[in-house]
Every structure is written in structure tokens, then in C-alpha cells.
Image 1 (cartoon, rainbow, N blue to C red):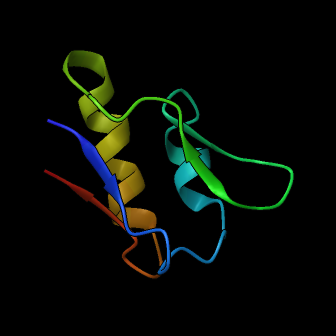
Image 2: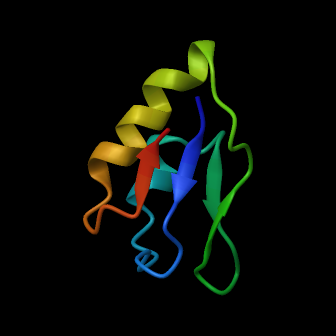
Image 3: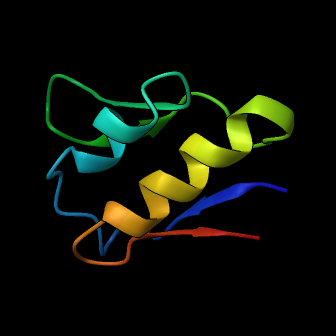
Length: 62
């Protein structure tokens, strides 16, 4: 599985970063950076949480 970011939709709220800091972070400009797109095992739950908390639905699991 992988995390897919719809970059134009992302508004940089950072809720996803709080849910999955091991997978993503906001850079100094407030842009979301996916540290790892491929997920499995222990990363599945935080990745799903990050997708759920995004207020603009900029993330999805594929």
C-alpha cells in the first residue's frame, strides 16, 4: 500500500503530521512532505489515521 498526496488540495493544516510523524512532516514553507510513501505493518494504522484527519481530503491510501 502507499500514501498518495493530492498536493494542490493540501492546505498545510498539519493534522496528518500529528497522526503519523514517522511518515510525513511539514517543511519550513508549510508544505507537506511524505517521508515514506510505501507503507506496511506498523505504519498502516498511523497512515489511515492521517488520511482520516485531513480536513481537505488531500491524502488517500492506494
